Image 1 (tube, rainbow, N blue to C red):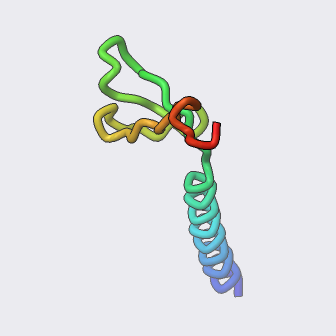
Image 2 (cartoon, one colour):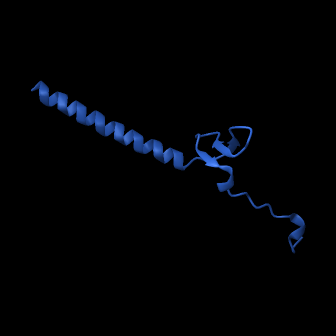
Image 3 (cartoon, helix red, strand yellow):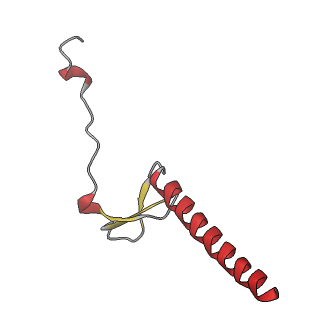
Length: 73
């Protein structure tokens, strides 16, 4: 009988670990990234919140609209 209890415990622990791993991935997707350079060359950037790495050339710059280009101004 103890063999079945032991197998049950192993299976339940495996399922719980798998479920926790899936939850961690969801958290990473909802991060509002703030990228900072990790070295002096500033070619590789890392998120200050989750640690995601990205190359600086792949990062899309934010477009800043000039106030004076607005025709309604």
